[in-house]
Amino acid sequence: MYTLFVCMDSCPTDKLIFKNHCVSSCPNSDTAIYKRECVQCSQLGMYKDNQHCVNRCKVVQFKNRCFNTCPPDVKFAHNGSCIQICLLNASKVDEQQHDQGSLLLCTEKYPTNKFTFGNNCVSSCPQSKSLPLNGICTACHEVGKFDDGSKCVDKCRNLQHDFRCVDYCPYKFKIYNNSCVRNCPLVAPLLGLISNNYTHVSKQGCVANCPEGEFLEENKCVSWCFSRHFIYNNTCVEKCPTGAPFITDKKPNWYYIRNYDCLKQCKDTHYSLNFTCFEKCPHGFYGHKKQCIKKCPEDFPYINHGHTCVENCQTLHQGMNCYDTCPQGTYQFDETCVQNCPSSKPYNYNSKCVDVCPHFLIQNTCYEQCPYGLVGYQRKCLLKCPTEAKYRYNWECFVQCPNNTILNLQKYSCFDSCPNGKFKYQQLCYDQCPLQAPYYVKGECVDFCDGYLKGSKCLEHCPHFYDNNFNCIKECPKNSYPHGKFCKTDCPQSLPFTALFPSINNRCVEKCNNYELATENYKCILSSQCSGVIYDDTWCFQACPSQTYIKQTDGKNLCISLIPVYLMICILSLIVFINIAFGIKVWWHFYNPEQWLQRRDKSNETH
Image (spheres, rainbow, N blue to C red):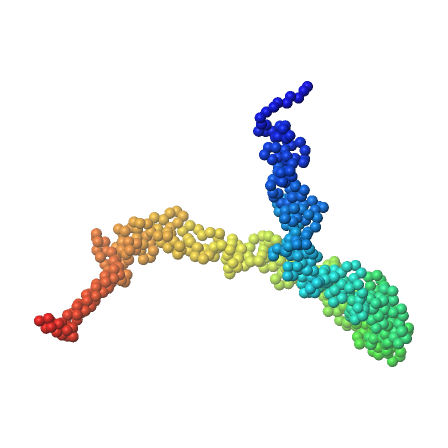
């Protein structure tokens, strides 16, 4: 195996020249292609751009090599070259974007379409200094404004913290005047819940006083005292002071913790017992003169339903107790409650003692209706109706069924209506109505239907059509037509003419045929059958209508309209008027005295 070198005048077109050798590609990174030779671009005063030598780089150059963006250790660009820092005569930095990347360009002054941020030119100000003021990116707080995330505003719509608009304060910060503060000021030293009008969530904030319904506990406004269970002057205290020794009980909260109000004295509606105020005295005690006592005094001996002592009962009483209604197991007798009615009023009716029972009586108890399984007769409850009153209606016995009720002869019962499929007639039920009352309305047979008939059923309104006998039908029969809902033999307005040769299903037509004429009573006849006059080739009349005249043609009397004659007369009259006016104008032109004298004077002057 050996290598053969051939001497040539020039390298092939697909080869490059390197040190008098033909090569496929340049052998090292320091060389590049120039005129099909591998050379060092710097020796020719040129720059290496990828694998070729160029006179000028497209973007920037560093150490005779072309770059799309400067390397990190020489990141600034000036006059097409990468440098470590910008020079004094070009100290401003403008960040420019191009297709292959970005450049930090050193310039003498900033472009007018960009903004200054520190020592850099930027197309848009960053969020930390979002306000472009006189071409300089400025923070909102530097001009006394607040940053809402997209722009500077004079006032935040919710809260502000460190000149930024926020929806919630950071941890351990409180709300004061729509600002987040770490410590409350002296003018609002208390902590309370403040409603957020934007988020509709209550958060802890600084307040001057606790709102109504809240209490002060250890510098905080609370809706319930948790550690100190007594409340005095809207403040949670460990015990009531001597100036307000009375306590009133509040209902427990969600944590089943009771609070007690400290009062100088109980409310007018409350009673006191051992310095405790009660709306109602405890069991075994009775309220009297704002105090709870064991026994009512002699001048107020009665006890009402509120466990208070009263002079007299306003309603009912049993012993020394007052009631609005008598307790269960007792009965009202005048103004007292008794366990047994006296002989003067021996009967119990609706828990009251009465002398007469107006309804049915069982063992001195009066019932408006006998209990289930019993029937009533002559104010007594019986197991069954007696023979003299054997008909039963609504659990009562009658000699005969009441009027307008129905008799069941098999069970001797009276009903208000017949079973389904039956018809009522003279207090009896029938499978179908009898001949003397053949119609039925609402299940009852009648001899006359004051409405419309659908078979034997009498209807107040007919849903479809009805005939001369007021029978409801779904459609009109042959040779009759609907006039509204009424089926009549007369032709309707939509088909007004009676056909000369009617069809099986229809004798009314919209118009007569071409060889037919319509008479004055809207019947179609043959043209030869017309014994009167013919009008408009459509009608056969006994006499011509107004504004027409008779003309005989081919043995027929035709009615001809006079309107064309009237029009012709008007036209001829107009022509005559125009001719007369024109003649008058010509005569006046030739026989006007003044013009005649002027023509004569001109003729004399000529001669």
